[in-house]
Image (cartoon, rainbow, N blue to C red; front, side, top):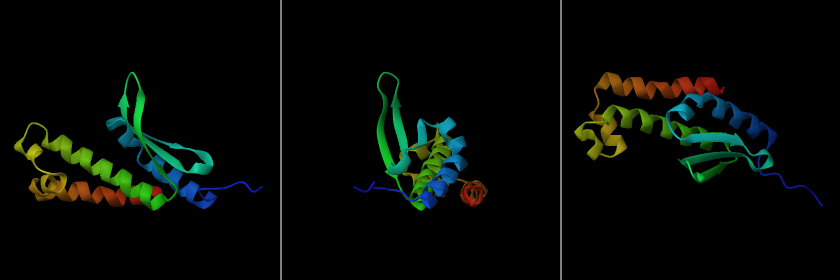
Length: 119
């Protein structure tokens, strides 16, 4: 009987780099990414103090993990900037477009920063 593997060692190492690169995100929102061994990496989110994490997503591909965490990061940045303004009535892409061009560029340039941290 062979042991089934869901993530390769190569992808596991790449996923760990991605998880480490986004560590600043975990301090901003109730998200944590953990190595689940042969099953891949698990993103735990929606933390409830009495119950723990209510939701989770499993990743076996570092690109998928990167794009998911990137989206979480920029949503958090845009949401924080929109707090207390009418921008909260918009969806995230429209919130971003409504920000000053310099701020939009600053947020979007951070993607390159994370990509470099993952390489």
